[in-house]
Image (cartoon, rainbow, N blue to C red; front, side, top):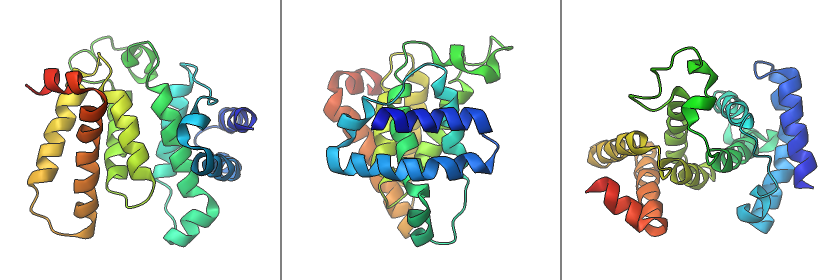
Amino acid sequence: MVTPLMFIVRSKTSELGIASDESLEVIKPKCIILYSLVTVCGYKAVVRFFPHQVSDLELAVSLLEKCHHTKSVSSLRQESTGEMEAKCVMLLWLSILVLVPFDHSTVDTSIANNSNLGKLEPAPLVLRIVGFSKDYLSNSGPMSPIAALLLLKLLTRPDMPKAFSSFVEWTHEVLSSLTDDAINHFRLLGATEVPAAIFRVCFHFFVVHTI
């Protein structure tokens, strides 16, 4: 069931184009079903059936960005129209796509004509992933733990020391913030969830990159 649904998500997005609002309306019902499977079976049982071609990485990033910038009237409307499910499914899809065995700068078409970008700093594609993942860490819903999972997979890649160091600095800034509101509270929880997950899963990696 997962494979044909993801095939529709990928093919319809490619066919209609990322810029088309119709693409989101087409994939939302499929994402509702996919996310229901995730809640029942667990994400590990579902994501192994997700497509993981290298060419899917930019597609998934662009699709999630479109979901991310889509505004809803209310949280109830967001859930009922499948926007929350679409975001969760895209985050989960990216959590396996970021593991592609290639330097992300080599698959980032935005720097295809500039060989210097991606060498001194993380590739723009990586910065985009980290950017919206940080936003989701401030979310009180299910996007936060999935965004933390995505960052865990991305930042522990051996070619991501700069991105990891930058994220650690951001985490320190968040923890040092004196802002006392609900959003900052959830941001604090989300920001600490990523290094905690890295520490649990990759203790050696955490020691090497923070000492």
